[in-house]
Image 1: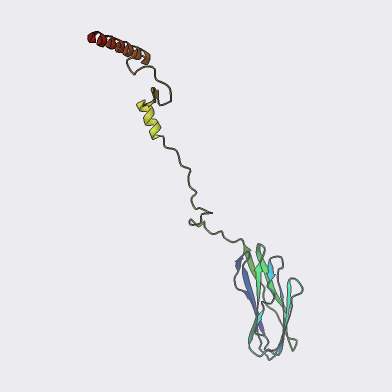
Image 2: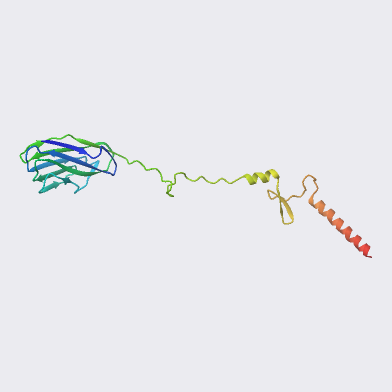
Length: 208
């Protein structure tokens, strides 16, 4: 008789499932087959009730009470290739957790031996950031930089602002001298007042 063991993948991500299959080729007719599967309970968790077997057309007994060991007995096996599939969930990283099928015996007491199979567990690869997800932007927005064009133009031109009756520069300082002339605003105001008084006197004199 020949028995083999294999895994659905040689490497799985932590949290993913992997199936391990023990296949038995019954060369001589035997109606009872026993299989014991040993696994690394630190790296894998057995999914209870996941066994899928074609060993027996009648009764099948599973004992998974012992951590790291699953015992299966099946009756009414026929002369053909039969398989038992177990499902596990990877729970810890490991370079290679070993699964071993042992205790393979038939009704006549004939024993089978099979090779081990190992499965590596790795951390899941992080998915690239979804640019459409507002919570995780692919390119965080850069803070806006205030434009300095207007400020520079105002400073270069030396622009002046008239606020009410006062003339102020771009810094808010009141201008008391006219540009280039050096004449103060108060001096001009005095001259204007004198001219106004003279004009009034002239007008009165003419009326008389």
